[in-house]
Length: 327
Length: 252
Image (cartoon, rainbow over all chains, first blue to last red):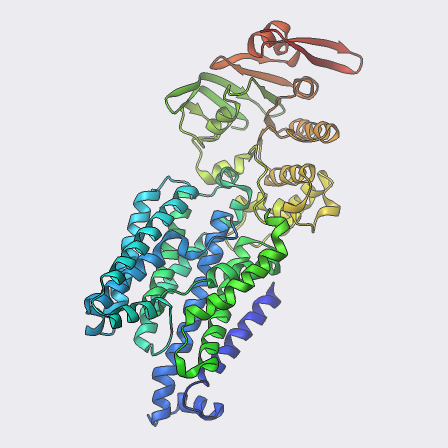
């Protein structure tokens, strides 16, 4: 367990350094890393601090968030196919962002789009809390999440449908694929608090997730307050996914695949999986973001496309391997 | 106060009254079997006693805080749920959850209780196996060990022997009886009246919307009560080998 966390932490750090040294400007690694800490404010320092550093940090923060939220959702629903998007927050955040692009609000300032996405996410969470209620079971939560996702998806399609010109539609579609390109430190400061709050809320539920291994009744008689736990979990996941989607768009498969891969390595314990999965998520998103820049640097390959392209076959392989247990 | 005290307990589910005015006291040292036909409300009675469903009347457990309740009663639901392939040892350790600090660190004295529970149910060889991949009987044992590790004065189990082979049924009932003999109050719902007759110190017959009979097995398992509650004729004899009870025919 400790070894696994150590290895994952080393991977995160190594990939962070690698991520900092990759970019269209071919600069030797040592030179670029020195420039990061230099005080001469030369062009390279600027590139490092304003372009590469935010991108590398965001890959860690958003990846860790998705991994953590995915592990928590799977633990809570006791279903290895659950993922953070299930409660409808990513869909409603995307709708907010799409509306901002459609109305031209996104062009008015850097923060207009993330804030619109956050507004969408908050609306989605409010709806799900009303629908799933303080006393609803996990099934109500899933159904409410599916309904909200479907509604947000339909409205997003409506906006696309009504988009005034192909360029707006193009922009919307590309945004929805998810990307970390051209993000600034402002985006980092926007996403980071949401991640911290969300992570704190989810960590709070660790014990409850372990107890839920025995089912809801048994967990309750082990002293777990299930309705409080559900609220913590929904708000935590919403903060992480909402903040992440606001700055990077919809990035799928990280929250689904990472907990699944790491589960056997932590003895399947839901509480241990939380932080292992957070580190694993950071590793996976960093790898994807590096791949995006290395494979087709000129074509602006989208991050969400790569995570899905890598994630889906990996997931199929896992299902193939474990299908006997699943059935 | 140890044991379990229910006064005028009643449950209404979806506007249908399941039972009402159930007043029962179970003291330490007792192994009480809860019997009754399907739908009589055995599970509802136990869940109401725990405070897991809304009810009228009084239950000594339902008024405790969640934390106090977790230190007073261990509950084994009928569905033997093990969601993840965690090791048997970790599964049993979940019983210590209400007693641990949030860090999840298991102190020496808690580990001793876990080890004792594992030994008691002969789970030693299975200790590092994934609990969700064990056979039904092994899973049942692991879950009982979890409840034993919780080390509470009251134990409640909903049909703990359903789906087990005869040997496992008998040994499971023995374990509950031993736990009662050690000074715990044990309440198990059970459909196998023959095993109930042999292993319980007392039976509560739940039928017709309330407690139809409450007393020693010989008294509760009378032909009249069995005909009235279950609609069956029975053969019940006290032999050198202990009480032998056999349901015979459906009489209505």
